[in-house]
Image 1 (tube, one colour):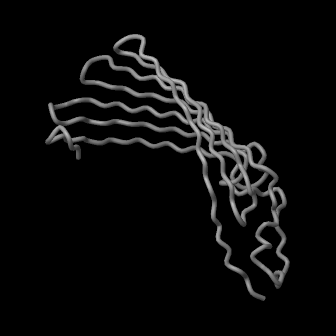
Image 2: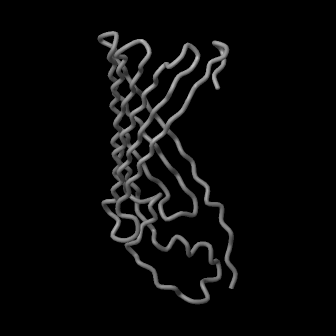
Image 3: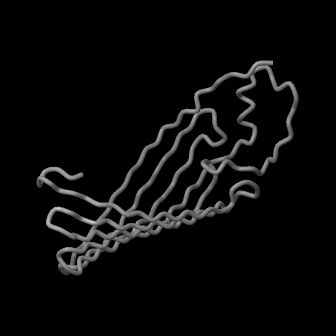
Length: 171
């Protein structure tokens, strides 16, 4: 029995806005919202929506230091999950029926709640050189998943250097 190759394509549409206020010279705060709409072909979920609520806090304590912090709360909701969507790739049926867990959800299509914290600092160490430091923490929870990925955590630290030999270019 043959298996058909299907194009697992998707369309993503994003809508967002953000408003910032800088009441004093060394402090800025922002609020934002982003909505992501996914449409998929030949997958377990045809449509999902994700709402992102964003809060940012930027500090400029002295002229040579900038600290940017943000927190994002995301909630993704998927429409009806079809655990048998893979059957579409077997136009003549499977040779052997394989058991599968009806409650298993693919993590990229399942309902998800996410908390993301990002902090970045820029320090001007020389006239044409900046040092960049960053930290990123992401906590994911899959509230409707009984099997598979139920929660995840990722952490990343970064260090970088920017060099400005000419005011129009950076490396």
